[in-house]
Image (tube, rainbow, N blue to C red; front, side, top):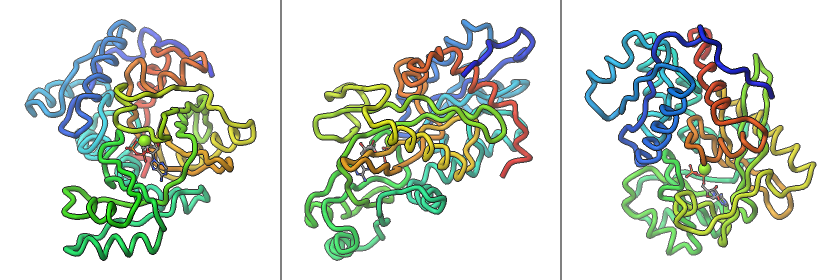
Length: 323
Ligand SMILES: Nc1ncnc2c1ncn2[C@@H]1O[C@H](COP(=O)(O)OP(=O)(O)O)[C@@H](O)[C@H]1O
Ligand SMILES: [Mg+2]
């Protein structure tokens, strides 16, 4: 895929790099923000780095007269459509997906429903219903899905709060007084693979070489993502050519079904029987230089600066024409 460098007149006004925020992924957002800001500056783009969790006046000042907002931020309050809605109301262009795709994408249960309706295989799952009787709820879920199950917050990312429940008793203890909405999913053993999709035109796509994260227990956990647990990366993922084709096709189907825009990263499991099972979309994946998307792009001969150029150009779109 060819991504021409930014032309001198392409981004003449400032670009507000929005980072930080108040989600549990704040630290990773700040890392993305700093890295994106430094790279854009070195590419000759005038930037203002602004923390979404800072003073509202600072945010409004950064957006005033900005040609675009570059979203280098993840998690609740930012990846879920709230920032996108604010920017649209203010008439500021921004990178990545729009309000609807962001909101649906951040809710893992809703996203699976949409993607499954487009014919992509997803794990069977249920949302945990708020109840005083966690044992009964655990028995209900075990009856529907069997054990073990993966338990995860419906609206978090970064493997935050992700737990494997092996027994109904373990499941009941996880469901007792949760502080966030939880869902349970059938557990699939296999390879954890991430697939990056770049939109190259109206309904044309380029899929980056899928990246496999190999961990001793097979889970791409919070610790593995932060480099504090063993994790080996393989790019491209170690799967057969026909599975590779399927991975790429399904990621595009999911991107389109969710009405993502410009770019997205999809997390899937490739089971031992080579079934591709879609788990979730990241509409604002981490953008550090060693992040998954940058690694996949690099493997494909796309530099970090070219990746940011693609993402920044994605802001030049007419949002009002989209859902
Ligand atoms: N149903 C499942 N079966 C097996 N492993 C899973 C399942 N769901 C999640 N995982 C593991 O946990 C990781 C994180 O889950 P994911 O759904 O991508 O949430 P997050 O938004 O926290 O990244 C996955 O990459 C995979 O390794
Ligand atoms: Mg994930």
